Length: 161
Figure 1 (cartoon, rainbow, N blue to C red):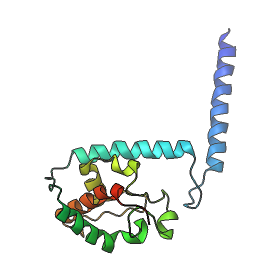
Figure 2 (cartoon, one colour):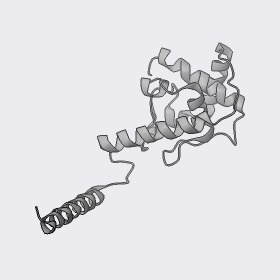
Figure 3 (tube, rainbow, N blue to C red):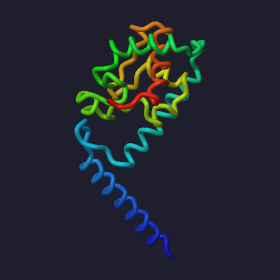
Figure 4 (cartoon, rainbow, N blue to C red):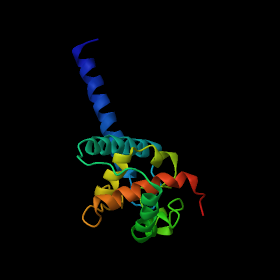
């Protein structure tokens, strides 16, 4: 193959990549009403796990030991701060939560429960930008955030309402 044909192949591939990217961009939507595709969801989920894990690992906090009293206190904090999106039971997102992107998760789901305690604590404290999840560090004490984590851990044992 001559240098010229190699060059033409490279130019053709570059043009194909540019056209594909342009088509994807043209079809892209930033509407919170549109369901994202599998690729977007997988990419966003993986990125979120990497970043939250990295940030949580850098935290220097002492975990409050779990107790039923802590989880009960977390349920009270949850009822004041979280039900507008996550629903009263934490497992059935409200209309607001269902209209957000990403959709508000069922906090008792395996996807949420696989986060470590420190990762959940980090999410409660700092929130997740562009997701609708606010950070509560300026409003809650660390102890209140640990109570929320402990309450979230009880949710798989509660049925959806």
